Image (cartoon, rainbow, N blue to C red; front, side, top):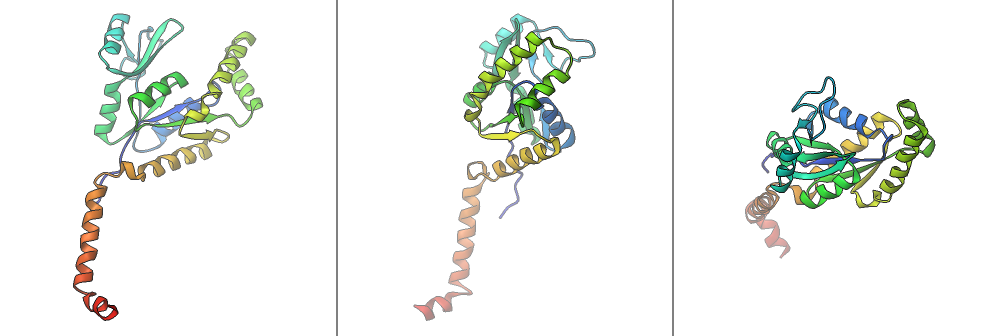
Length: 225
């Protein structure tokens, strides 16, 4: 059988705020071969230190709307008055390079990816406990009690969508979580629907076995017959 490259597909991670999803994404992209981060388009202004094309594709609202209307975004949403979306070109470029593009998006975006890219793999990340979630959110030290309460209310809604995802991963310890995600990717690469050239390989294998039976093992068949 011919040796072919492993299939690649978008890997979507979604989770309630404070679960550690972004940390997982960065560890996948910077600590693993074959993974790349999807650079989103946004209408918000760059923050200090951010670079266009690296952190985000910074565009004006008119350009973003044109991209959405032209089908150039596989998902997009408005958040706090600004528009964010995933350019289809990011997925295409990663596929050409033979890399899994990793998308760090919310539940709404994950649903859009599911509709637009049926081959994408959706992973929902859970915190190990409510206490851990609360501690991680409070540990940021950047939000008021009202803001923390708002994030927890959002988490309640997002958890309702967990069963829509392909896999569930509990982020208790980062290394173990990464192993779980890598295991998911390895398993998905072996899914028969992703096997490139599988039908041709099976035909060739069956033909080779047939030739063995007609040649080297022909007498065995005749004797048993």
